View 1 (tube, one colour):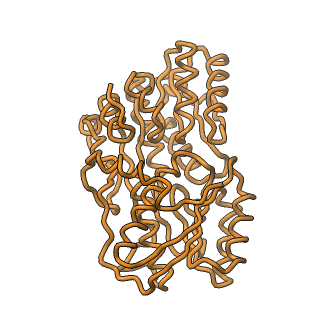
View 2 (spheres, rainbow, N blue to C red; view 1 turned 90 degrees about the vertical axis):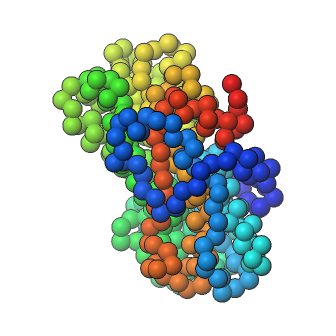
Length: 360
């Protein structure tokens, strides 16, 4: 479990600010309409926007206390935390103090998330309760129940609740299905639209993982010479993804590609491919340092990078407005859309330098 404060990642934030990313809008859409050639140009300068500033909204209070629970203790949510902390810092400069709990289990569990949400609501300590939904079917009714009891509830990060959920707003990735489809189109093109493909999903029931996987399946189904030979859940674990990939390679000696639907599984898949020297094309999600190194080295073909920093930053901006009794409309949308950018080998060195200070 983790309790985040502004101090916790101050040094890392400072390092990130030195990276000099270009500015972008939190309302921007993913770049689905770009041509194939445009998509393959260097894009790492636009993938993450660290130069965020608070909007003109004036909070009604000088102190807020929030509760956020997410799927699992993992570096992806550490990146979201950086955005949360920067919004917290900027609000403090305006005389507004934000405190919060930022809590998750060591192993993904919807039951654990339900327990945390109920405990947070029962405490009565929080202006807003937020969840990165671990399982849509289980958690959506819990959020409804909390809302019915008068709690101000939102969702954030990578997974929204079900369509009829009474949560007030969502901040995060609104296009997981499209991300999965976009990655798979890149894979299909690379393979000449023929070959056998395996899918590593992540956590069963997690909306973001399941939606990406559905995007993969629907894209593969468009091409008669492509086939999905297996779908496996790795529980967002590098070790599990490594082992599952080894099993794929043992069972399918003509496997052509692997689509990875979370941040952990491209790392595990690449380890197995390097170890076996298999000729397999890997596409996957996000900004793990080892995955970016494998992208640079040609082991991974492309990665979909989400703007985690903006997700965290906008989560705080929206949470303050919700706490003040504001509803979606002119001040904030019901779903704040954050960017995913597909990057290729030519982008890897710049991304590694900007995120991790790695210069080859």
